[in-house]
Image 1 (cartoon, rainbow, N blue to C red):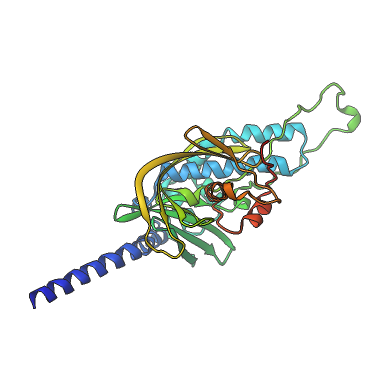
Image 2 (image 1 turned 135 degrees about the vertical axis):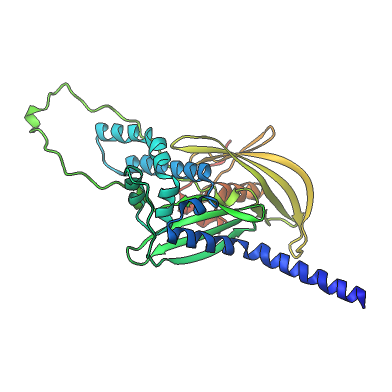
Length: 341
């Protein structure tokens, strides 16, 4: 009898622990919503990883500015001005991503409201009566995505939360690119063509292809899987590191624990030995490096060779958070990389 009672108690404890483990991001989200609505920046800050959020904003804004150069028929002076502006991103983001600025964004206010608020003298935070629509989903067992939409102004943003012990913290806030675009100033009068000195020429700007990569699918706790052959190969990310970034490419390093499972099996057999993969996210030279082995992945319309299929799946998930059909992904992101001779 005692054994049955003990067994039942253990089952209840396990059930409650499992329920809390699954429900914990929803509980944290509820606290975030109430703190944002009340304008309680101090309480909200307990759930925000500010260095990580600031870095995510810097990456987004730098990508947008470079893409803006490539998409417009700009002259040299305009392009030069935009490139100089990218050097000011760090200071601007540091001014915006403050407890008050993040509170405004999580209240559903326009991104530019946060920027405006950062330059106001008053630090008084007001409550919000905005009614927001929320949608949520797990990205992995340790990553949780929340999409906030303001039905009044049709503005939305995405919040990426990461498990932090028994709680969760906001690691990334994704703002639509149009919200980052400053309002255009009134056009300035131009000199008649004959008054422009002939010897003054706009500086030549060498444009580089703009590439926006998404690393949310390979953050700590994420799982990579390739089932091209039986057994499937599995990799769990235990560390993510961005090594370098230019307008055209980003270099990242993943620390993985490998494993495998049969096609029809549920249990994963882990080898528990961590290894590192360095990935160059580039539209012209997508590359994986494991130890001394360097592989350029031939992503093109002709299809990926079977021997490199696992590398291609790893690359697409790491650089684009893409796990769909390979041919569609290659076309979607504009790859045309041929196999090396």
